[in-house]
Image (spheres, rainbow, N blue to C red):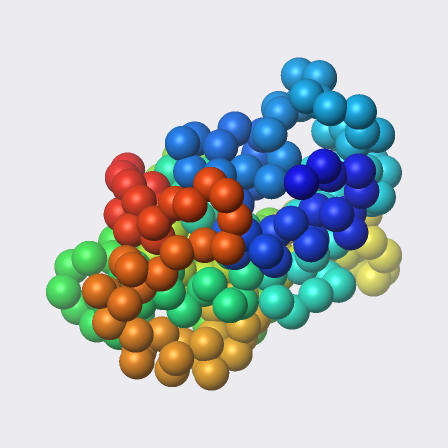
Length: 229
C-alpha cells in the first residue's frame, strides 16, 4: 500500500496487525519501508522528522497514542519501537506472558529487580512521564544504562507501554523543556478485557494466527525471534 499521509498509515497498520516503528522491517514487516536518511521508493510527501503530523512517521507514534485506543506503540521488536493493534495484541501477549502476571514473573526470577522498581512506580502513579519515573526512583546518570535496559525489558515483556507525552512542570505550574514519553501498564492502556482474552489463547493458537497482508509472517516469527536480546 502506498502511504501518503497519517490516515493511510493507520489503515495499513490496522490491516497488517503489527509493524516495526522505524523504516527497517528487520525481516518482519514495516508499514514505512524507508529510514530517515533514505528516499521513499515511491512518490509520497511522507518524510521523517519534519514535524508535520500528517506526513511525519515520527509524529505518528504519539498521534496514534493520543488519538486512538486500538493501537499500542512501544519497544516491542528487537528492543526497538513497533506497533501492535488491539486485535493482534492478545496473541502476542499469549506467547510473551503465557497467561502469567507481573508478580508471577518476578517471583520466578524472570524480571529484574530494577524493572520491578520501575514497574512499581508506574503502578503507583497510573500514568507517568519518563523524567518523573527517574525522579521518583532516585535514578542518577550513573544508572542510565541499567535504567534504559530495565524499561525496555518491561516493554518487551508487555507489562508497560507508551501512552503519550508530557513536558516537565515548573514550580509555577508552567510546562517547559522537551517532551518526555509517558508510560502506563498495558492493562490501563488497552483494558483488562485484552489481558483476559490473551489468557484464553493457547500458544499454539497464537502461533498459527496469520496476518491479513501479503507479507504472510507467522506470528511465532514475530514473537519469539524478536524477543532475542
